[in-house]
Image 1 (spheres, each protein chain N blue to C red):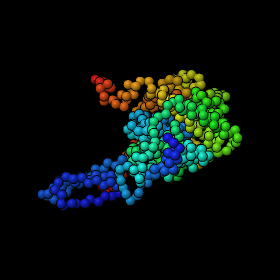
Image 2: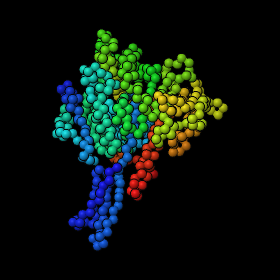
Image 3: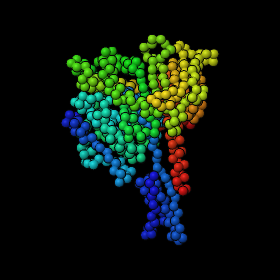
Length: 124
Length: 396
């Protein structure tokens, strides 16, 4: 995911505008529906591994310390520590998810698909 | 409420046909009898009422303990949308959809670094989009909501959100924008005191490689000015505030394990009747441990009193200490009034259902569960009210 794509996304965030004259119960679409497809192609959507996040946290702490060494009250310093906080939260969530979900793959599958043969339960 | 007119059409051959009017989501069932020319109209309304709950919390989105307890009270486990972006922050259950307000960041992580603003700053958030989408969901229209990926720090492609019965918006700024505030049927603010926040963050982050005590402290201190300026003032608008403070039962405690939790409930909110101890509006201090109940150190202490909070009349229910055993919990529950439970012991049952969640043995879990029950009660009252209003309008 290149930065060009990133800036493209952050600038052209799809704005959903519900026009008062048109009452639709269908989902409100982008003004340029063909662009939705192209955005999907540009974004590679996959969950990042846990090791990746820990590295990110470590790196961001290093960066924050360096930025704040010059000027502890500047905007950059505050933004850097905010990034550390965000990444730490994401890391802790990833850890919890791993602890909670990774134990039994069959259980996970059956939670999502209870009607399959492997997952049927007969209570009476 | 929109009124649809009924048109009669002569040319159709069929005896039954359906016309749907999309503006008011009502279906008119028409049966035309060619012989007698009498028309029978049956009105079927299938409009869904959506209530919007706002939760202001610093801890992150959707996966927090409070959300899981809340969705559990309404029934069903809330899960991320199937088949969608695995880093989505949204949680969906049968009745509830939880939306993370971080999805309305107008600046992603790189944008914020460039502009030198934190995520707490309103400049990093698109309040117009937030207002439009919450309004659309509240009136029953599905929306394409952007996704903010916390792992990569970028804004991903949007996901489709269907209007649910109960919409919860959780994040840093649910009550910041006035228009969004007016859409909320109930709002909660989770106020963690600085000492407790520090203790919790230490517990959370000490397992991470790069962190040390200094870096955790620096992170909290750096965010504090923005937090105090933008997030904290939302307290005054909340209908319920859950304040988490260090305990007063253990002198000089800095572990943050035993907590003093205060549930501050605004008086005069429609469909919301505050929980009370012994009698409404009185002041009472209660220690349940004694002859009937033996508790281990440091025990439990309850307090209830009317108070004033930011110029509003409030009732404050406070719990200091920890539960050790099931019978302590049920004993306490039997002495609290106005809990909006459907059966005796419902609070205890909910707490036991999630005994592994943090806060299950102290006031945080207890008050979060109680707030969940209050919201369920609010929802049911609102639905009943709207149904009677509609019935009366149909009669008139």
